Length: 134
Image (cartoon, rainbow, N blue to C red):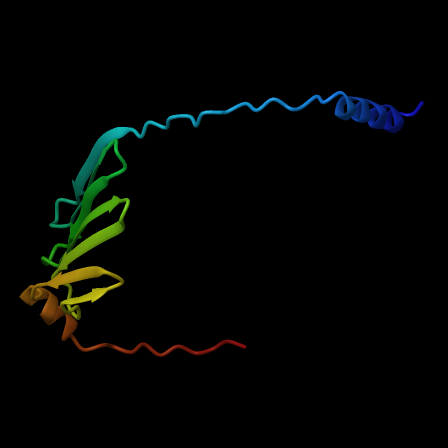
């Protein structure tokens, strides 16, 4: 007798005897979200600095901030919250060319750039010609 024939006979016998599968309820494992807090800051000693700080409350909410400042005073700081409502950043900067606006639900709060950044942007551009080699 082949395996397939044996399997069919066994299944038929179980059905005729009224054997039913037993219902077993499985509980969902409880996932405990970790609480944490970390951060770092560093600079080059010439005026450039960067940082990042973040913390989680263990209930699904994460808050943090990161940013930089260059040696002429241009900065960008981002404060954010990530929770059940999504990722919500607030960007604060004085980078030249930015304006106060909201892009993709992220508000930009812009201050005037430092004078050194404005002067740097007004320098004449020197074009350096180059030749294509064949």
